[in-house]
Image (cartoon, rainbow, N blue to C red; front, side, top):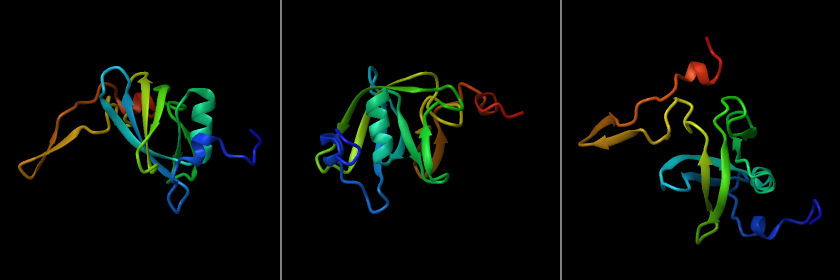
Length: 133
């Protein structure tokens, strides 16, 4: 594959107008949904090439290699594409916590009877994860 020729996998993805596709990370052996983030073509290619999950940060407008700062990496087990080609499911082996809040999953708040209920407590202090004091 040359640099100008997209891989068959990339050709199947319907990126949005911003060149992004939604990516849901799920723990491969338990089915636990860990997080949702965005990927651009470069992030998809890097993830497939290295086996380490890479996302695109919309706020920083650059690639975000999961765990680069915190050490909480995601190793790709399998990448799946949905029937419309506009969402990816990343089956991963999560090292530590997935959420920047120190929780295993970013989906730690339940909406019950009109109330927000925190259902997952932090496992790690975020200040320790990101060396903030």
